[in-house]
Image (cartoon, rainbow, N blue to C red; front, top):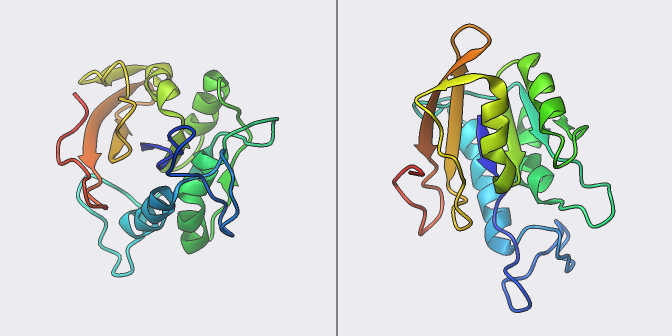
Length: 177
């Protein structure tokens, strides 16, 4: 499963990025992004144990590494609450741009959730192998509210579907087309 990292700052005016401690940080989520991160924890690990149709409780979490200079912390922040809820560690061993290494790691993992930059999500899907039906070639700049789900049929062929998150006011009910 793949999600785009949650909402980010949109330029010199607000909304602004803030750390988990409320300190200004242009590489962190906005307040709405933090709200989505908390809601994603409930979506993927609901208290009642009933996961929404089409989704599964992840057993492995991946996000791009933010430790390089000017690296975005948003992918890891997006799934940090989920990691806490599940008692998992977010694997940040791959950097943005290292799609082949991420795909190799995901292939050996259990049910996984990847939080990543939207520009690279289609390349991650393509790197997995044959996908039916084909995933969209791009992830729109303004969409934070969809989960892309891939289920392996034999290790190199994948079934693709989309689950609209519908977690926050304004979230779309339609998949990315």
